Image 1: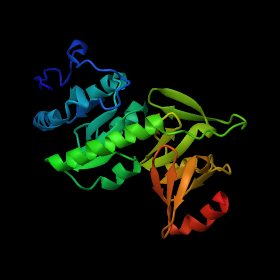
Image 2: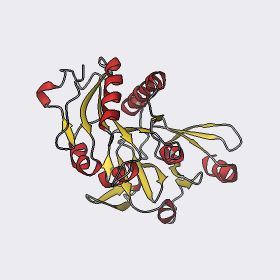
Image 3: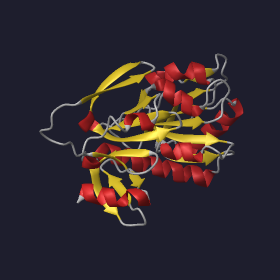
Image 4: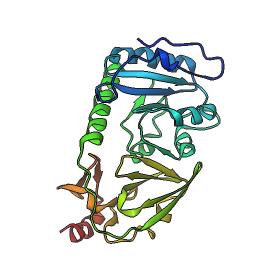
Length: 268
């Protein structure tokens, strides 16, 4: 059971020798961290997560966003419970500072004005404070499904295509990635989030509009205002006004009505 520790240096990591012993091959055990500037709020959330102690362990609690960034980057997380509105740096700016990360995100906030931004990041969930226990359970189930799909989905990697590198500048350096490994790019305020075939996410401080001309290859298409999709990773098209694309990593992306006809031409 997670014991909350008083935080003298604005954040506290649980010592590695205090971690419950488990096999990383056991997908039922997830590693989580909490970032919330309110100590009481992070303590309450950690307490509520005790219910899931057999499938989730809290390995870090942070109460200062600026100090937390470097520590979070070093943790092998499955999910970060991230407060949105914090002094000095909000949750979206934290992700921007991280530059690249493999974990999922569940936003927690007392404000309901950030829902769209959270959805654009493909967050697992968006929980309003005080966190409802039933909604938390739903979020954990959704998280487990997302992690399972990410681990076991058979990623479609295009074969025999020439390498075409793209430079992505982040706070920690410049990533050179092959375009064929880009599953999709999502808008997040003034940032763009690149989701790759290996589930890695790279946050770049440029808008989606700036990358649209660069990703003008036949396999890429901006299917709505917020997402550019690599059509080579589409596994299913679900009918609707604009329809919905299901990608190989389990993501579901809505297609705008205006883009439907062009999409049909490219897919079929």
